[in-house]
Image (cartoon, rainbow, N blue to C red):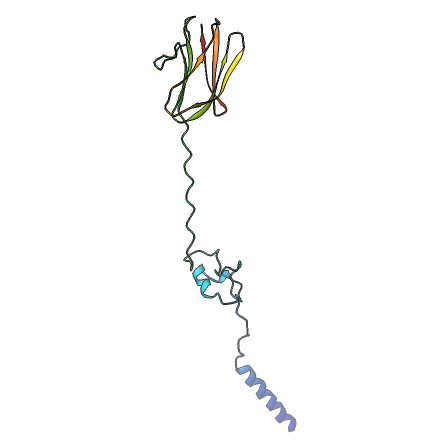
Amino acid sequence: MKRFVLLLVAAAAALAVAAFPSPPEAKALDYDCADFANQAEAQEYLLPGDPYRLDGDGDGVACEDLPCPCSYEAPPPPPPPPPPPPEPQIRTYVACGLSRSARPAHECAHRSKVGAFIRSTQPVTYTVCITFPSRRRFCAENQEAGAEVLYVNKVTSSAAGWHKVVWFVDGRRFSWRFWRR
């Protein structure tokens, strides 16, 4: 009989344990940036000492990669770079004469003065080279041309035949013209 009572008490104890639900498992809370919808929400959970490691770089701002609304002012976007300056508009020509009213020409009389003209909308540095009929070449280097001013380089040649004038602007060949006596 003692056994029966003992068995009955054991069965009652087992039934009592099974009838009452066990408490939920104890689990330590750990938040990650993925647990939040935006940066401001994550910032509310940032505690002193950062136990959840929400502030990766230690600057006091949690989960900076999350979308805004943010708990801090976003830095203003950098200003756009200034537009590049427009390319200068340059006009070059050879004329039979040295005055500003001399007209472009491809053939000049034997005794006439000849000029190589250049005009630019912006200041430029240029070089002008003349190749004579004998294939000899002469250059006037590093000439400065101001904006909207007509410049002339005098060509001193009495040789008969074709001459070639080449202008280089800022180190690049820009234009060339042929003329003859």
